[in-house]
Picture 1 (spheres, rainbow, N blue to C red):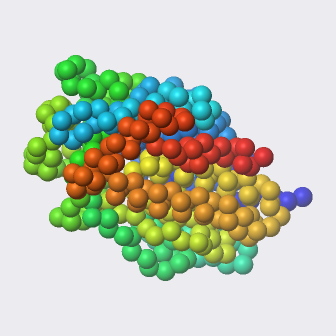
Picture 2: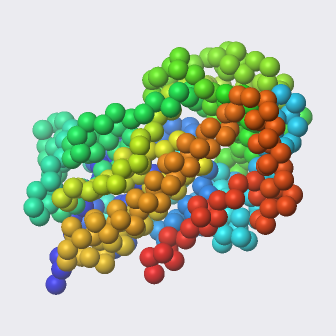
Picture 3: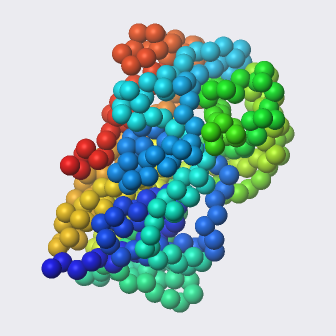
Length: 397
């Protein structure tokens, strides 16, 4: 009889918790090493496209996440200066077209659902991994306090600056994209109704774009502003800044958008980085998952989705090749790497399209979006069925 594998997951974010849940459902013995002393989460929203919801369905938590999220019928695309609606993305049609909705959710709520679903996982909080080492029949994670965790497999779900990745593949600095991002969260009831917030919106202008959408079933408005600039290269998600920075950077943009900014009590900024796609995710009994394998820009809204898909595929591969875990990791990366690569490169292309500087280029793009809405088969702005329509559960059957 094949014995139950012991799997150590480095990182307790979305990818790490999703992997733990998927593997727990396969009755694996799971340890999560999380460097933070508590499982707290910053106040940030995120988008979960239909492919993410279908992956959460495989994990058995789709309904619980939907109950905590917001499902908008439309996402409107607006002109940065006039406020004119360029196009409406019919997100309400996603459920019919792809078999799952498009959801906006508070990141803390998603993490809470995943944590509550876990039953037998051994959480090691305040356990900072400083190195991993693979050997013939397993791997070991070395901790900052001198401790070690041995496992049959170690999964690096520790983000873009992955210690696990560096340990097995060597130093590889992430790529600065030349873009700064600000995020804030406003209480919806405090915002005047004449500011268009009932549905999600994306404002596209020269060298930048802004998205805002409801989370926590409309109680809060998540605001994320992107702008091309090399004046700030720090990546921290917890660096606070003053709203005046946004008012200066977006001077001349539509008054409705500018008037929304002060309703967030706190603003945070960080520089956007990604990594070039890689073909190898595994070495020996160590593998990568989520941002540690394929850190991408947020412009396709796929960071969390790809990590959750990774988790489902990794678990299925380990279950199928339980007697040969090396083969399991090889099967995992062979199935996941091409799709993740497409998402990384697609996110870069979307960044270019969102931030066009030339008025003529903007006009051409806007006309294309409007025509897609009017004449497109699915009546959505972005024809990305390969991305949103991917059902990882069906893939694994």
